[in-house]
Image (cartoon, rainbow, N blue to C red; front, side, top):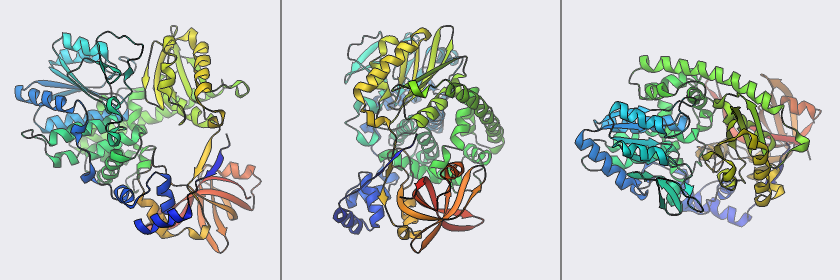
Amino acid sequence: MMARWLVNRTNPEFVGHLSRAASVSPISAQILINRGLKTPVAVSEFLNASVSGLEDPFLLSGMQAAVARIRHAAALGERILVHGDYDADGVTATAIIVQTLRTAGMDVQYFIPNRIDHGYGFNQPGVDRACEVGAKLIVTVDCGISSFSATAAAAAAGIDVIITDHHEPVRAVGQTIQHAAELNGFLIPEAIAIVNPKLQHEEVPRLAHLSGAGIAFKVGHALALTDGFRFSPDDLLSLLDLAALGTVADVVPVTAENRILVREGMRYIESALRPGIRALKTVSGLDARTVRSGLLAFTMVPRINAAGRVADAHDVVRMLLARTDDEAIPISVWLDGLNTERQKIESEIYQAARSKIDQAAMDSVIVLAGEGWHPGVLGIVASKISDEFNRPTFIFSTDNGIAKGSARSIPAFDICKGLAECSEMLITFGGHRQAAGVKLEAHRLADFEAALSRVMRSTIPEHDLAPTLEIDADIALSDVSHALAAEIERLEPFGMGNPEPLLGSRSLEVINPRIVGSNHLKMRLRGNLTAIDSIAFDMGAAFQQMDAPEKIDAVFTPSFNEWKGSRYLQLVIKALRPGS
């Protein structure tokens, strides 16, 4: 679907003021303003984010009680079971808590549910495992905020539960759930402590969007600040690689505390002191490359996720905690093979789902289902189709009259709020603003699609369903320089909330266009007296369909291309059209 190009514009006098006050170029000043950074102090904090800017972990409600119970377990020598999740955020969060508690000399085991055998989240299998190993305390990571029955079952078995999670809690309005307490308008499990910033969103804005791994890191942070607990601030820093990996994987905003975790954590990933990270970089082909946060999402993260999607993720935690290369390398090689298998399954289901789409009859949401589709790849397929059609997309696998699925949304639509308005049709649902899991009776799929489409139409204007490409600034090609590319590098890490800057130029002359690789367009672009090498990934065929125009309008990011020890300026083209 062709996107509308929208150029952000700000009063030139204000751009000039911020440029001078913050000592950045006017183009960088415009980019920073577009991200809500409008004072020299805000710009400085953003550009110089470091661990010294980490927020007090005790600002999170429930943290004092969680730390007190962990210290009590340490004093009594109790065994703890860390209950994680099978995705990259969940396994990194698990590894963070396990490493923290083991460093302090505590008796710790961990449990990662199997997607097929146990389902998502903290449920009865986790309680059973805690009973089997004799744990007196369960600490959940990246799950548990809606695990009312499991928390009650653990209590009945004499096991305390600490829940750390970042998913949306259940709103109390019009709901009655057994074994639930009420807090701040939400229904929560009756746990010893619950650490979830979603329960206090307005009170801790800089911590509001932590991932599961980010919250696990804050638990470690709190313990590192606790007198008498054998876990130091230096021990905490060694967890930054895991926190960064989980944060990138879960696609949370890379702002505030998350920016610090990813920015600082990338240094540890780059140095790869952890054997598991080192092994994962090797199989991901990153040994000889400068590792950017955006690259992780296409290399290391899919390999970590592959275990939870098509096998069992327990050994991923073992790899991340491995002390030697001999232990880590075989697991990383196994993950690489699983990722290849995952790609094959995903391609088959994507093609099957894509063939079911009737564009002429497309409503505000897309709901597709297939018998026996592998549940491990439904979310990826939903994401691809949502991106392609700019619609919230639900992909279900049906079995014995039950449809279980994954959903991905568009920025304008809070999918969890939408599902809450259709909750009477659903068996279960949960997730984030942009992603969710759903379960319902298969015969209700058509009614569900109609109901959610009505919700969409009543809350989202029609023009929000048309994709847009937001351009940070309209510039002349002569404005692009090594200095500008270096300034843009300082804005990293990029992601949600801090997207890679997009600049636009009009009527650029195309010089020597050619297809390289599978479908990449290589060329030089010239504007007036300036010519710069450019690469447009996966746009070769699209350029040819335009009849290879002599001039184009282009949206791009200036960057450095590193090749055989050299570093030169190039434009990475994000969109193009015949010159205006």
